[in-house]
Amino acid sequence: MKINQRSFNILVVILTAIILALSGLFAFSARAQSSLPRDEAGSRGKDDTSDFIPVQGRLTDADGNPLDGTYNITFSIYDHSSGGTALCSNTHTCDVSDGLFTAYMSAIGCADEIDGRQLYLGIEVESDGEMVPRAFLDNVPYAWTFRPGAKVTFGSSSPLLTLNNTENGTGLLTSSMDGLAIEAAGTGIIASTAPTYLWISGSDIRPYSSGDSTVITMDTIGGARVERGATGGTKYAMLPVTIAGTLYGQNVTISAIDIYWVGETELYGITDLRIRRQANGVCPGCYVDLLHDGDDAICDIANNPSGCVLHYDLTSNNVLNPDSGVIHIGFGLDFGGASTYVDIGGVRLTLEYHD
Image (cartoon, rainbow, N blue to C red):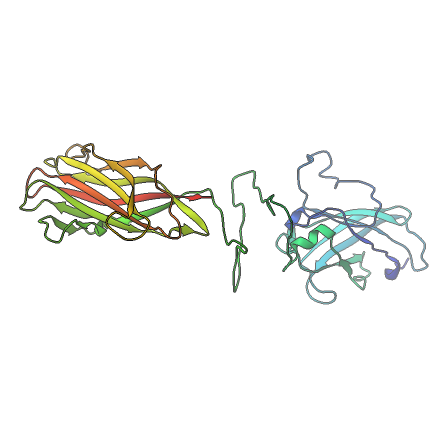
């Protein structure tokens, strides 16, 4: 019996509120004879997603009479209304009763194709040739917000859109062949709760004064060796740091500092450590203290061949802003002799974001 292609009725109805990759479900007709594919029945919870597109239709002969029996039906998804190559295809053996059938097309092959663009469904019964025209896959109203170029608007103080990955992995991935991959309009703020670590090379350290006898020699791995020189007493070395007052529209909080260092056995230690921030202009008194530690810190290489780390949590005057981003770190070094040294490997600042 010849199957009448034009009598194979397809009504496109999107059942879900959102189409996102394989989580979207498409239905063709308003009547269903089962709610899950046979191999998934009873195995999914209410929060699980499906890799299947439910398809329903009515099959008749050339005279319009509904058919009964078993037929092989091939479902294909295209990104063209005619011609072209199918993005993915599945053939199912369908039980037809009074012309009505239900099938579940696997959409795994279209995992990267169901992305908001216009798609079409092609159907072929047995070897009768694919029906024309292809079915136009229309939108669920809420799915419009995921079409290319769509805008999501919500007039509320609540988050506009929340993407929550409840397991390990990427929460949001954006890409662009040409142009912006992600843009923060309005205030321009891109918020993050993850800390940022800023490393300052020990090679940047310098004497407090050009007339100081302190000798500073760079090493070959980004650090520096500081020696006392001829003049005795405590010597001071400075490490200036310039950072952005704001990152991605948010004020920056310096929440911690770690100093990586080691001294010769005769080095008495770091006897004075100060961290200051420029504030309210540029003048001798235009600063605030983030940290002042006058206690001795000892790390001799004989007992610490891998060096030491001085760690401080910063809680005062540590919020930078658009008018403040210059930090000054000062070391007071107490040497035991002219050639006694301290190696400053580097300094790490922990940056966090301030509302």
